[in-house]
Length: 87
Image (tube, rainbow, N blue to C red):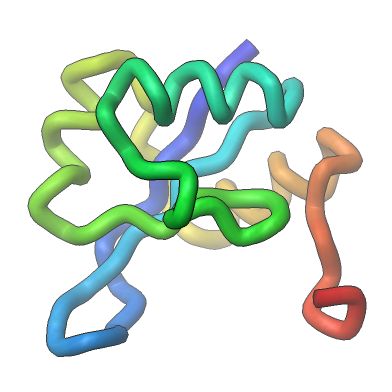
Protein backbone atom coordinates (compact mmCIF):
# COMPACT_ATOMS: atom_id res chain seq x y z
CA UNK A 1 0.00 0.00 0.00
CA UNK A 2 1.83 3.03 -1.30
CA UNK A 3 1.05 6.50 -2.60
CA UNK A 4 3.64 7.67 -5.11
CA UNK A 5 4.57 11.11 -6.43
CA UNK A 6 6.82 11.85 -9.40
CA UNK A 7 9.03 14.93 -9.86
CA UNK A 8 7.34 18.18 -10.93
CA UNK A 9 8.22 18.02 -14.63
CA UNK A 10 4.94 18.64 -16.42
CA UNK A 11 4.33 22.25 -17.54
CA UNK A 12 0.78 23.58 -17.51
CA UNK A 13 -0.79 26.94 -16.65
CA UNK A 14 2.60 28.63 -16.09
CA UNK A 15 3.90 26.13 -13.52
CA UNK A 16 5.23 22.59 -13.20
CA UNK A 17 3.12 19.67 -11.99
CA UNK A 18 3.63 16.24 -10.42
CA UNK A 19 1.38 13.20 -10.50
CA UNK A 20 0.14 11.55 -7.32
CA UNK A 21 -0.97 7.90 -7.66
CA UNK A 22 -1.62 4.79 -5.59
CA UNK A 23 -0.21 1.40 -6.47
CA UNK A 24 -3.04 -0.24 -4.50
CA UNK A 25 -6.42 1.46 -4.85
CA UNK A 26 -8.21 4.63 -5.80
CA UNK A 27 -9.78 4.68 -2.33
CA UNK A 28 -6.29 4.91 -0.83
CA UNK A 29 -5.38 7.67 -3.29
CA UNK A 30 -8.49 9.71 -2.55
CA UNK A 31 -8.02 9.32 1.22
CA UNK A 32 -4.40 10.49 1.01
CA UNK A 33 -5.33 13.42 -1.24
CA UNK A 34 -8.14 14.49 1.08
CA UNK A 35 -5.88 14.30 4.13
CA UNK A 36 -3.28 16.36 2.24
CA UNK A 37 -5.86 19.00 1.31
CA UNK A 38 -5.72 18.31 -2.43
CA UNK A 39 -9.03 19.23 -4.05
CA UNK A 40 -10.95 16.47 -5.86
CA UNK A 41 -10.94 18.60 -9.02
CA UNK A 42 -7.24 17.67 -9.34
CA UNK A 43 -8.17 14.03 -9.97
CA UNK A 44 -7.76 12.80 -13.56
CA UNK A 45 -9.11 9.22 -13.73
CA UNK A 46 -6.04 7.49 -12.26
CA UNK A 47 -3.96 10.27 -10.69
CA UNK A 48 -4.04 13.70 -9.09
CA UNK A 49 -2.19 16.59 -10.69
CA UNK A 50 -0.38 18.51 -7.96
CA UNK A 51 1.61 21.75 -8.32
CA UNK A 52 5.38 21.72 -7.82
CA UNK A 53 5.25 23.54 -4.49
CA UNK A 54 3.30 20.61 -2.99
CA UNK A 55 5.88 17.91 -3.84
CA UNK A 56 8.06 18.14 -0.70
CA UNK A 57 5.01 18.38 1.56
CA UNK A 58 3.45 15.27 0.02
CA UNK A 59 6.68 13.34 0.59
CA UNK A 60 6.75 14.57 4.19
CA UNK A 61 3.16 13.30 4.58
CA UNK A 62 4.20 9.83 3.42
CA UNK A 63 4.12 9.75 -0.37
CA UNK A 64 7.05 7.89 -1.90
CA UNK A 65 9.05 10.05 -4.32
CA UNK A 66 9.79 8.07 -7.48
CA UNK A 67 10.84 8.83 -11.04
CA UNK A 68 8.19 9.15 -13.72
CA UNK A 69 8.99 5.79 -15.32
CA UNK A 70 8.77 4.02 -11.97
CA UNK A 71 5.47 5.74 -11.21
CA UNK A 72 3.97 4.60 -14.53
CA UNK A 73 5.39 1.08 -14.16
CA UNK A 74 3.84 0.66 -10.72
CA UNK A 75 0.54 2.26 -11.76
CA UNK A 76 0.29 -0.18 -14.69
CA UNK A 77 1.18 -3.14 -12.46
CA UNK A 78 -1.60 -2.14 -10.05
CA UNK A 79 -4.21 -2.34 -12.81
CA UNK A 80 -5.33 1.23 -12.10
CA UNK A 81 -3.72 2.89 -15.14
CA UNK A 82 -6.15 4.52 -17.58
CA UNK A 83 -4.61 4.51 -21.05
CA UNK A 84 -4.50 7.76 -23.04
CA UNK A 85 -6.84 6.36 -25.69
CA UNK A 86 -9.41 5.57 -22.99
CA UNK A 87 -9.43 9.08 -21.52
